[in-house]
Length: 545
Image (cartoon, rainbow, N blue to C red; front, top):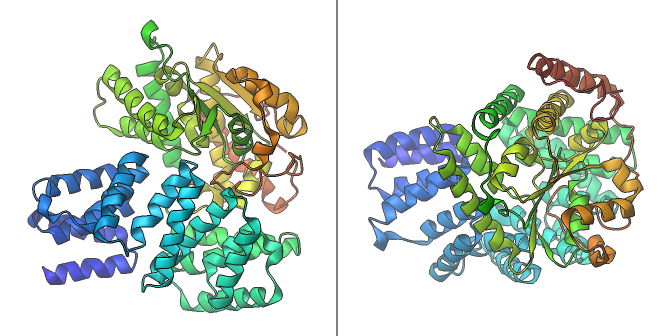
């Protein structure tokens, strides 16, 4: 078996995770009591985002062999619970891991991320500083260094330590040039990239372009340089900047497997499920207050959700949970089952799980924000599951959204952003399911629609409307707190300062504008055949031109 395990490790090192998983599963069928196979399979499940399966696998083995619970067990359990947003359990696991091996940076990095999510920035900073010190002094630097540095820069942003952030990155880049660190500096303050750094980046890019031929290797070593250089040249050489964005997005396309038609099928499944299971479902009186402390902000990515989040979270009674995955994941898992569970059982399970997780995050605050944009897929379901919750839905000019998406270095969370064609198809899908929600939800007393352009032109009026909708005291709005609001998203440095309308009617990538609109209209025709027709030729009031 030593040979088979070695072959699996070779596949992992070559980033062939799917093949490694297939081989590990075969080995597991024969050697279910071998702890080496358990650890390999747990690692591969995590790489494939199969976190519940990881927990079940580990519990099944280690409950029968409790004496074998070691550092790896607690680390794998901790990261799985983190991704499931069971933060309390995750922190417990990492505490046990640190007791077993206090010298490993792994015991500090994820807890630092969790405390950042919980907005305990001081505790997060303490932990990441320990992790950073251990990474810098160990032979694990290559593996963990970029991620630890990234978290450190995010914490610095949260603590409003801008100058410290810049000095930190510049000093690291002087010692050893790293593509990810160059990208981080470009995303925080591109004007501080001097000629020496620029020459290094472009030379490094040429070298990596020759060395790395595998698409996954290129994604790690070439991709961040393309986007970093694109951000640097944005206000220096527009044509050069756009070319680097194209190169970066082409690398994304090569490294991923995104099928826009699978997304379309998913929407059809959601609509069919709502029609058959939830459309006529009436919440009993005793449950009508469930979700009364939960706010959802949703819409297309890059449509102003983070700005609205900052406005609401400036209120002393509101805690932001950021982009929470729980509601979406629980609903997707429910829809993916071959045989749907009893509806009442699912509703009870969803409410218990989701509210437990969000209550832990909001701690002593009265309200909590869930700002995952793609929850627009489940507007109808959410209003049935959490009938007292309130939803703010955002809209923005589709071409401005497309440009903004294309310019972000999304890795896996928004795969369609690397192609104007795919973005156009996505926008038509967004339109279709929102047309459906508008048609079947007759009383929209729990939904407020906000248009980005109106928000940035009339922020005070919209702030007042938002607070009235959420039953928040208008006098509790704190503009200074809003400007300092931290969000771990692509908008990390874009919501500070005074609200402005400089991102309205963008004039970039114009040679792709027709391709974008053609794909949007093509996909719209598909949905029209399904009976989901817009009321007019516009996109929620925006002219398609």
